Length: 198
Image (cartoon, rainbow, N blue to C red; front, side):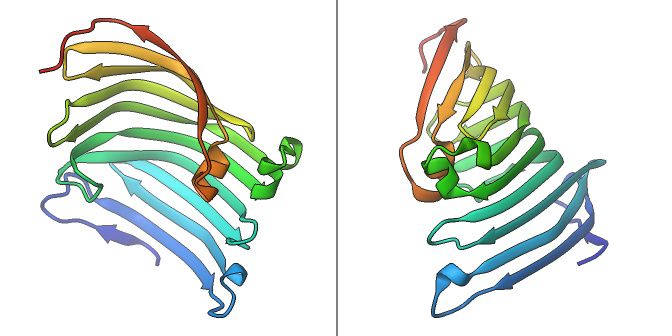
């Protein structure tokens, strides 16, 4: 796809300059021979560009991946999102992330052989789900290494009355994503205003 455009009345901004180049090889007899190559993904939303490339080999035995994400994603204020139970989700995601290597490098703690670096910043994230208090993440910054993902001072507001901040790190996040293993973490909670939820 080249020069794609998405526009309809419920979308506050057009998604323009969409470019996609993807190749997939699937072996029906051996899923481990599946190869996915996303050589190009580009889009622009509200004047903000976003680019991504991705490749995956040996997804069953030992996922071998290469991923690069760069730019800004703006989640516009749609209602009734496709995500489970989310009735409203808005916010801005700024990312510059590079990852390359095999999952076995992480599980065997060969961190020097796996490349994982970059940051993910979120601003003005609003999550509203039916039956639950509204959650707003004013700011949060995640930085990535092969061994852990560090969260720096995430500022949250719950139900418009209680605010607090959290910082810390999550370990084993790659095996958690690819193998559903246990996610480990050590977080520091800093209370601000705490009000009983209605």
